Image (cartoon, rainbow, N blue to C red; front, side, top):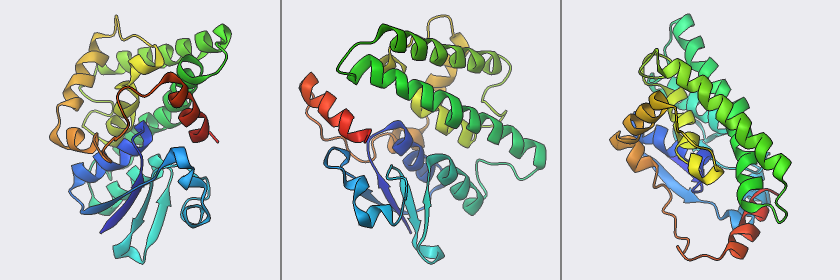
Length: 223
């Protein structure tokens, strides 16, 4: 059994989608980011970085894994799924995974902050991060014109990248002129495991949440 500490964010969805894809039983333990539960001592004992997601593998002496990319690799190796064992195939998947972890995630995350949440609209910052996110999408486009998935076969690289690209509108970044990315986004999004994982945990925020409340929640999440 896997305990999944998570919240409704792109990084959180990586872990829940992966667990659904590989079919491991798991128990969801929602973390309230607005209340800074991720900074409490009990949680920092599991994840020193104070972020989500974190998993605890109860079948492996309560082994804890933090950082979403590391979680994907751990679950892939545990189950023998979605990560090739052959050297070049494995490397190809990890290369695209690292592009998401080191590029798309950080850049789009900053685009989210400055475009949606920053109390002061700084045009330079918004433009910088939106343009870099779009540039990285164009890298994906080139690859996906050649291959159905990022690393030939569907893999953890697709899971990690999809969770971020699927919220491109929230970052103010368009997919116009990227037909291969649009095709891939729709295809991955139709997978039953992706659809199940994408609603873990249930997002109970009110749809009419005020902008002020959203800003306050986002600022707490970034602490």
